[in-house]
Structure formats: structure tokens, C-alpha cells
Length: 196
Length: 332
Image 1 (cartoon, rainbow over the protein chains, first blue to last red):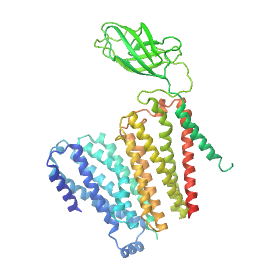
Image 2: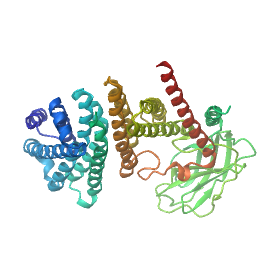
Image 3: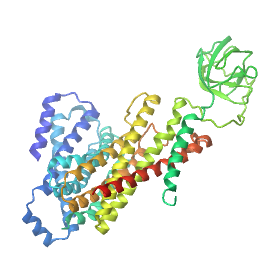
Image 4: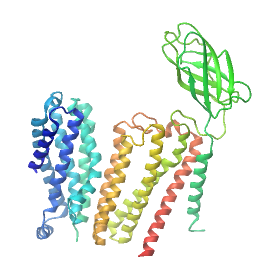
């Protein structure tokens, strides 16, 4: 996974050679992370064989399974986004970073990465149950994740522009609220996917 | 009659509202004023109107007002039903702000072209010699004539009901999905699917009418507006819903997956569509400082057509949904 992100960032680095404006820099980062999230989370349910599924079925409640999956996915995405951010700044940092509120940006990246993970976990479960690979996951996940991605991008652009916490916190709280909502929905709906 | 009276009502409402939307005349208004700036001395303004009858009942009164003062034209010549020429004497040292051109036909209407002329290079305001009446006289049934919108205001009766109908059908579909998860009956799953299909038809109509309207008023077929992004996301979600249904063969499993996705996507979408436009700017009325239609744009003349149109289209949507469900049961 990490290799995938690093290669993507390196390709961008070779491709652009310096001069990226702030909005483009921001958008590029989130596009890379979005695709990384799709790749990472498609595996979380797909890599499972029938035997292990039966084992889990007899062992744990569906609520426990989805919460564990969600937590695992969120942690993976947080680590992944932090490492890719580090890599991205090293290779493509430049003048964009100079005026940014870096702590705020890192918080946005963590909350945003966890949010992507939360939304895509349930989508991944659905597409795995449908028996269709990453193609279906992209079709189902893209429209659901898009509005969230737009608000994350706006929050992170605010952080890059060096806005104060108070003026940018609306977006941040908003993303966080959607995270909570998504987890609640997954918790309620997953048992119906788990039965049979 | 007992079972289909509401279908008859739906048809009557849609036909009646559509006819009214197309046939009710647009209120008279002013469209242009040449030249666009004043200079001290004698100035002749050529004013064009739309749907006006300046040639009837004698020449109208014409005035200029800049918010501080106002003056009346010395001489008004009617050139035709929609064209009038007014000669003003502008005092020295007037300027620095924009002025509205006001035309008062003898029929009692009040026509204003806002910020029509720049008062010139001086610094003073216009002398306080004339005030235009606060209230216009009562008029017949006509749609308000608004800058930028003009005749396209009629589209209100088509564009907005499409989205309302779509949302009603999607809410219905989610209702059936919840009912399916609770009961496990495949009948409710079929109803959820058909409601989505019909809602996509209305989404297509909404996009089409909206696109035409955007081209006429904002100058582009598509703009990067939160409402438009919301509409695009909605359409994509429900297309994905149909793709999901298409990719699972087993009926029971398909129903499970589709119901879960439907509820999940609908709740997230609802939250985004309701809240996000209020956090950001939008060209649509009601968002980002733009007034909503309901505040003062939607006057009684529009309401008289708009509410029946909304009701009629929603009922038509339910009727279509009903037909689709019955068709697929009949063919099975």
C-alpha cells in the first residue's frame, strides 16, 4: 500500500517538476489519497476466504466485526495518510508549505483519512458480498465519498492558506460529524449484510 | 372513479399549471437605457421597455432617482409601444453614484430600471425635486418581470417541481428499503427499485430544465455550484444503486445489498445536500446570501401556479411509480 502511494507521489514529482499552485497541490494530494484508500479498503473484506468468514460468523457479533473493521481501516488510513503526507512534502513541498498552518493541516489529514476509511468500509463490505471486485467498489463508493472529499479539500485548503482555527473549524467539525454519522449507520446496517 | 380520481386530478393540475406557466403574460418592465452616463446640461435618454404600452393613454411620466434626490423629465416623447425618449436638465456638479430610471405609465404601473445610469463626474446628488410613488397600482394576473430572469421565470413551474418529485420518490424508496430490511419481503424490494427508476427519470428532467435555465441566466450549461454538484452526486448514487442491483444474480442477496446501500447513500446524501450549500456560496436562491424564492421573489401571482404544479408533478411521479410496479408484477 505504502509502495503504491510512494510510487504515485514520485510519478507526480517527476511529472510536475516544481511549480504547483496551492489549489492544485492540495487537490493532487487528496486524489492520490483517495485512490490509495480505495485500494487499501477494497482488500479489507475481499481477502477473506469462506472458511475464515464462517469462523468469524460463529465467533463474533456483526456489530463487533464492523466496528473492528472500521477501527482497523481508520488506523491504516491515518498511518498511510501521514506517511504519504511526509513523502509528499519532502518531494513536492516547496513554497506551498511556507504559509501553511502545518499542525492544522495534519489534523485535517488525520480526520479526513479516517472519514474516507469509515465511508469506504461499509461500501467495501457491500461490494465484497456482491462478489464483484474493486470495479463495483469504485462505482458505489465514488458518489458517496465525493461530497465528503469536497469538504475535506476545503478544510485542508483553509489550513494551507493559514486560516485561523476558529474560521476553519466549521469544516473540520463538519467532517468529524459525518465520520460519526457514518460509523453509526454502518453499525446499524451491517448486521443485514452479515446474515445468511 | 373511486380509485382513479387522484390520477385525473394529477393530470389536470399538471396540464393546467403548465398552460398557465406558458400563457400568463410577463409584467411590463424596462430593458435598456441609452446613454448610460449623464453630464451637466441637457441629456436625452432613450428608454426601451418590454411588454409595455407607452402609446396608450398619453405619455408616461419619467424620472431619475439616486437614492438621495430625484428629478423629473422636462419632456417625454413616445416613439412606440416599447420605446420612449425623455429629455432631462441635469444640474451642474452632479455625479459619483448610479441612478435608477423610473417610468410611470398612466395606467398606474411603476417600471424601474435599477442602476441604469451613472450620474457623472461631479460629486453632488440629484436635487430633491421628485419622488416616485411607494406603491404601484394593482394589476392583473402577470408574472413579475425581473432582471436577468425575464421570461425564463416561467421555468420555475417546471424545473423546481422535478426536483421535489425526485426527492419524494427517493424518500419513498428508502422507506421501502427500511420496510424490506424489517420484513424481508421481496415485494417491498421491488417497490424500492421502481421508485428509484422513476426518480432518475425526474432527475434527468430536472437536469435538462436546469441546464437550459442556467444557460439563459448564468450563461453556461453547467456551473460549479454546490446545488449542481449535489444533483450530480444524487444522480450518480442512484445509477450506482442500479449497477449494484444488476451485478448480483440471487434475488434475496440483491435485495439485502441494495437496501443497505440505498439507506446508507440516502442519509449521507441528504446531510450533504441540506447542509453543505449553507456552508458555502451558491448561485441558487436561498444560499450564500441569495434570497430564497419564498421570501419575496415568489409573489402571489407565481404561487398560484407554482403550488399546483408541484402537487401535480408529485402525483404524476407517484402515478408513474404505481404503473411501473404493476407492470413488472404483470410480466413476472
